[in-house]
Amino acid sequence: MNKYKKLVFNTGIFAIGTFGSKILVFLLTRLYAHNIDPENNGVKELLETTLLLLQPVFTFALQEYLIRFGLDKEYDKREVFTTSGAITMIGMLIMAFTVPFLRVIPALDYLRGYTVLFILYVAMSSIRMLCQNFVRARDMVKLFSIDGILATLTFFIFNVIFIPWMHMGVKGFLLAVILSDGCSALFLFIAARLKEFAGAEYFNRALGREMMHFAMPLIPTIVMWAITSLSDRMFIKQMHSDYHELGKGAVAIYGFANKIPNLISLVSTIFFQAWSMSAITENASADRNKFYEKVYSAYEAIMFMAAAGLLLIVKPVTAFLVPSDKHAEYADVYIYTPVLIVAVVFMCFNQFLGSIYSATKHSKNSFWTAFVACAVNIPMNYFLIPAWGIQGAAVATFLSYVICFWARIIDARYYVPFRFDAVKSLVNTGILLIMSVLIIGSPKFGGVFVFLLFAVIMVMNYQAIIDTAKKLLKR
Image (tube, rainbow, N blue to C red; front, side, top):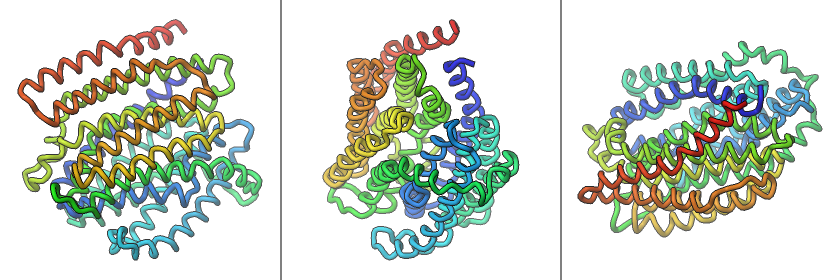
């Protein structure tokens, strides 16, 4: 199977296992809005984002080095799995001793009352990540997808049991994740026969050092992305504004506003699970640069088109997923969503370009480009949130992702020099931002102009997808 068809095949398999299940999880947003009040939803958002911050630190960027070394045929997969497992277990022990001390920090006071559950939440999520990524590294994409479906079903069932039925609120959410991840890890361990790859005799200290050498620049990279996300919520929670209401309730509104853009992220995640494998396995191929050019061109087109389509329906989708009948505050969620949709598009582009650094083992470049994003995000939050409230956090996120993108599109192409149409990218971005302003401002006949701009995006971008499809058919 050639590289293009394999990429499409893997993307299709991941889509089967991911799309339906992720939509089901996405619909849980409605359950949370109905059954958890805004302040506790804010706590839930902060706990989820804190996981994203702590997990790469205490797993030493497991998700990055395991897939990179697991796919590389030069390394014994038994040594990769056993050594990765040992590193993960050590990290979880350190994490368990560290988290209780974090809750005394005033800004992290939301950890109080959830410390034990949060430790289990991070640990079980990390163990599942270990099993998942190793299964993917073995090219067992069908099993990976089946696990995605089963894990989502168990997560949905546990949420229904613990939240609307047992009224356990945030604790119910944490229990649902812990039990679902535990079931997933056990299923993968048995179905993929991971026991055959685990054993003290397979532990390789030299390989561990090589993994850490590769992962060390990526840990602060992933952490900085998490800080970019967490800082939005922390500033909204902690800061005071004379013009806008902030606090934990505002964190919940911002969190719900981020759920809608996750539909864009969902499309990207399905593709990226397959792409990250192709990027590594095709890194040494003769036509690598052309491969990147074709794939990126189609990927960019799909992202811009998906964003325009989501902006077109953002109001009714938000009203359905985040009903405001019980909590009137949620009626304004859609106002903060458009800018975040455009921001997520650039987050996805950054993820794609980051795969170049992983494939070519230039992880330090991934670090400094992510540092640029973090360096922009934090001061922008500080200045914009008091003046613009939640919208200030959305704008800060957008600016940080865009600046990181332009840094990466310039730098990454030194290692994989593929052609990129900068003018087309700028025009697409400008149109999406105009659509966002029209949705937020709601002027007379604004809906008509939003639809016309949506049509322009479709016309501008469909050809790149057609060209890639033709190339596939020829092969």
